[in-house]
Amino acid sequence: MLEYQLHRHHARDLIAEMTEVRSAQRLRRARRSARAAASAPATPPARTADRAAAPAPSSGRLRRALRIA
Image 1 (tube, rainbow, N blue to C red):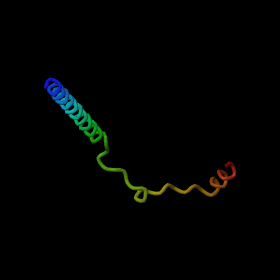
Image 2: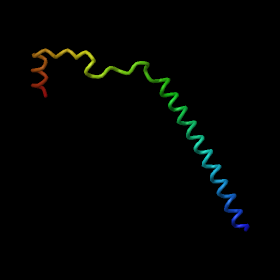
Image 3: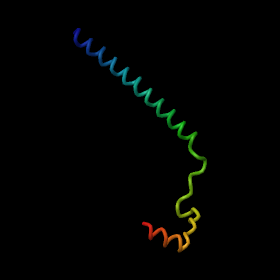
Image 4: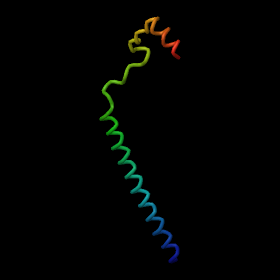
């Protein structure tokens, strides 16, 4: 009987410890997501297709760059 009670107490302690660990993890996750939400830009960056295209290099610069490469 004593072994059974010890086992029950040990199991109860383990369950309590796991509950604390999960609670701490949940709290850390909530803080992390709140921090990420605070630092995230209000509007997401535009997709590549929506952005203005970069100006094409002039043919002389392109030829020179290709010759160097």
